[in-house]
Image (cartoon, rainbow, N blue to C red; front, side, top):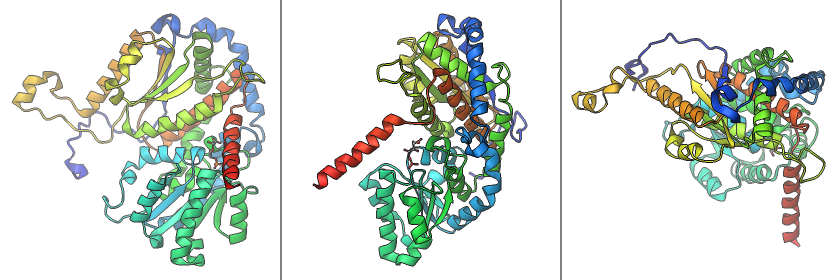
Length: 466
Ligand code: PA5
């Protein structure tokens, strides 16, 4: 339907963008009973909060070369935007882009693409021939690759291989197969022109390949780890290729960073959130943290959050396994879909959960609900209502029953869904995750046990050759 035909309600003027609002009211005991945070909890945590804030400031002092370099990306990437846009422009010359990468190397891009360019999720066959279409090659799955080979033509396809380490097995094996496909069909030189790499500036197998074959490439700053890299070339290149406003994304993140300068949780939203997440898990046994957006397009944002939270905080708080465990288990749910799936259990199960709702205040497109006489008789309360009214009512109702059931919950109110507000959400969660890790006394940047699994995979592959 052409946009002008959409029966929009237009109750509110569309704000150009705005600041994310964080409603923490229902995290507190006066709303949800004994499972909630108390003012006293927060007071007793005061010294720890000042300490972790000062730690964050100290360990970010070296800017992009500091341990918490990710918090500097919004400023540090500005001068790199011309190069990023240049690579994106080259990629736009192709009908299909295969983004080969996994974990932190693609989850942020997936989340933002899904939020801002959901039409790009549709296979190009269903959209006509306009490009570029971004395909994610992540899990090792021959069926998926086979489907891609059937759909794509090497002539109109570019490979964008993204790996910070430059050696992740899932990424490398699929890159090898895909570049071999290009080389066999187009020859080495044409294949070379269709390969783009984002990786560590100095180290790793991919960087060496870039040097040897003079492939087009951009660096990931050395201190930036995978799950904190969406605001580096890792996310900005593919997103710019899809015409996402990456400048607004960076500006949104910078805007939020500026709100987080205080060591007082009342004046620093990320510190306040970290304190609440930490207190709820460690003092009130909220072992499960459910993120439930009431916006389809934020479904993959919840995936991004799950990886960031789990890989950063899932650590023993001491030198040996068996020490107290840090972190709550992140779980994704979808409003309103999971009202018809998970909600029953949320309401009648252990009080070991906390919730993060995301609500969109302004829907750009809305539909009035047309009621004929029969529908009017069946659903009189829908008179004069639109789809936005329905999803808002569902969100408010679910939040109320969750609150009444004694589950602490917070709401992220997005004024609109655009690059600027998503940038804010990204900075909020990167910052909150780091603060929370510091409150537990763990390193939120590493993933030692994941590394063990990677090494063991290589051992299995080596053994089976013998
Ligand atoms: O957050 C992380 O560090 C991981 O999830 C990595 O992003 C993931 O393992 C992929 O690693 P790489 O980017 O080195 O290929």
